[in-house]
Image (cartoon, rainbow, N blue to C red; front, side):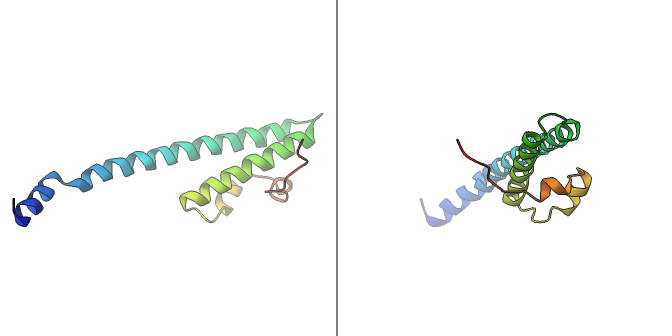
Amino acid sequence: MSLRDSLDLIRTVRPEAGTSALEYEVMAERAASLGAAEQRVVQAIAALAAATDDRDTCLAQARQTVWEYFVQRELIGFRKHNEVIQDLNIPGEVLAGLGAMGKRP
């Protein structure tokens, strides 16, 4: 088999088609995962708004959930969070403590 035959075979097989399908699957998983993380933020903010007794725990949980969501957004390539802060109505008290680590057992 000559070099020209090898190149023709590579063009026929189209290896980029296989990577395109894989890239599509990875992007779909990223989108689904980001959507799930956003739902966790919505739930944590709602729990904080409804909290009466254990508000400090709900605040800590909301901060952790929002921080995880922001990290995930940044890993995907979204560097600015202003729009989602407004869209999800994330309170300033949550934003003020992002990334803060509480006492570990």
